[in-house]
Length: 113
Image (cartoon, rainbow, N blue to C red):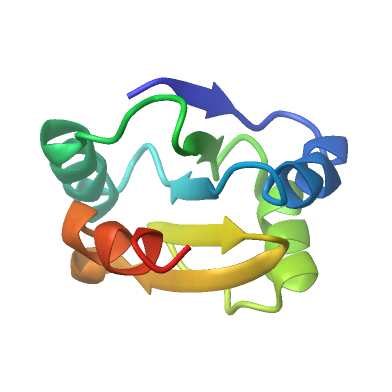
């Protein structure tokens, strides 16, 4: 997986714009949470998408909590940790958290994207 780090609030509108060209996935990760670490490990271990087919973004929640709040507001999703948000054509197609985070979940909406 080629994580693209989210480190500025400007990236959120860029991700939304970019999703009109290629689907985008945001993974919100708490670096001190074992469930979040497990979700990240499961994604990375099962990820088999072509790197040009989907862009994957990584947000360190502890370092960038205001950006996490901005993501929740911009995409009208409830803040969770860990959380994945799949965006296609500017719209949220999947919002999953905790043990619901899986590559199969992403594939279920990616096929329709």
